[in-house]
Image (cartoon, rainbow, N blue to C red; front, side, top):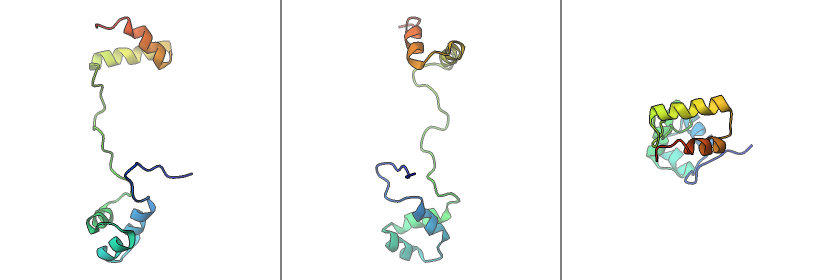
Length: 96
């Protein structure tokens, strides 16, 4: 199975792993992999190979209040309807 990378990715997980295991100098590794020495130093310091998550720490709706979101979740769990059907059923009760 292949590795999924974002559009700007220039390396795979194998390169940071190899950098972390290597005892070679930073400049030598940077030249070998075509990377900036600062990037090599950063990967060497990290405990894990994967990138840190870049989203919000607490995921919340930008449209619904916490109470409205709880109501929608309760409705969906109670009815077991697909999302589209929940949307159509709850649109009639919206305050707009």
